[in-house]
Figure: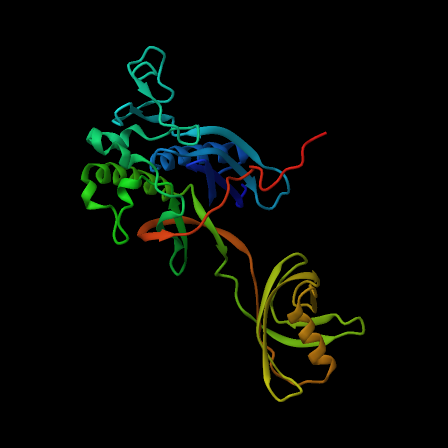
Length: 345
């Protein structure tokens, strides 16, 4: 069973004549293949779309095994499938998108409020909201978000990550303190119900985050040498690493020529070596070159340090805790032209 499939939802929001975009990614630990992963991501996208304000939407999704190059599968579509429209007096209502022909909400009575060409919204958010307040369903600026702390794993090895929820209704993002905004009671109640549904789905075991395997032990560095080809060779007791593995070296202390002590710490990829070594790691960074020059200059090693294999695993989500409002800039939507484009001939 694949254990490293990742799914990504791509979002778009229009502000005036400009569109902004962002993405949200999750690991899919229970998916047996990419098709199943895409189905699980689609379920999550439907729940996530219900949290969006009008004018923000998910325009496509992608799943991929992070260890396989160019194996992605993509699903196109637009979620949610509803429209927020206004009459000529500015009164709003939410209808299925697009309004069916002959419906009282069509162009003979109503005119759609253009929001980036795709006026969208979740009908359930508007339930019970006074018509005069329906403009509160419009999505807030894309740099405004709710910061959610995602927790995963089981004791004693747990991890966490931060997740920004953007594109939320303006009516519940009018405060810089707690959420939701109590001044918009019924809208807040509706949104929190959908938020609970979303976090319940996230934490049922099908979704998670990538993290380092905390059970991988730290092993002592027992020898460091530099050969005639300037390769740094590390002997590490009980490391059991193989070519291609990532290894974190830390705590190596060297006294240099000016009398000061330099500490070396870096994550490197094994090029050659198995078992306890000796290992040769990548030498493409300046810190490794520092170790080379230090040993060639005869500088004494004060501490050999330690090493740990950095294996990536998936921690299923166990909890989602909304913390506070946050602001973080975002740019143009993914897969859209950026800057000047040369015409095709």
